[in-house]
Image (cartoon, rainbow, N blue to C red; front, side, top):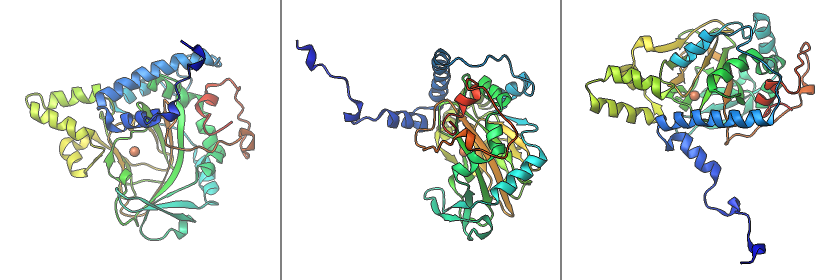
Length: 344
Ligand SMILES: [Fe+2]
């Protein structure tokens, strides 16, 4: 046999794109039990890879701010409130910083969201549901940079996910009460960005029951937690149990279905003053409730295992961020790894 004819297997010539296969598995091609199991496997696999390639500054435990109890709540409920992500003064600075920029408007309905050109927030036309700041505007904001590099937060997220996380989105958006129909994220759904993920949310204005609180169904994040809860509830109803799991696998759910299946005590409506912050596993059922009056401004960091495959990123130089007091970290800090898609 002529060894010179042997060639490398070229995946580009295949019909089957590995990214597409991976995406279709995470987006419902596999059932929740399997997706969650893969998440645990993937976290362990990545932990070994990351630690064999990086020599991080050593750290132990949670640091000075968050505790085992925060982790326990996140594991049991899928959500935990966090204090003091930003001070009042920082939020005022953030809102002033954002006021110089326009937003990308999104409107339509859950099946066909449309994007309009960008426009200033106070000129957003009627019918628009959401207004997003551009990624670079958000990642350049010094106070967002600072929280993205907060080692205490990263340690808590790492303890939850089982591996040093990757920041896969950094987002700020307005929700307006002028939208004509409900967009997908205004209906109950579960996120399908990765096999494991957790998001930080911070309200940048006061949010009451009418201006679009974020709503979360507790204990729906992990298969094993949800299974136990529903097994007890539907103990003698095996048909109902099967029907429930088929329903769970559908991506979007009606309010009526959710409110029939889960009790009011299980549905957490996050209302709170500006600065209200929570870490939430959005594999669990959630929605941004459509505001019936006023508007909501919210900041979100999404931590996942892998980068989101279907997104593009605009990394910026750390040195180009101005107006912040010295916030230097060593190059081998965990925060540099976590934020590598957005900062270099
Ligand atoms: Fe979501």
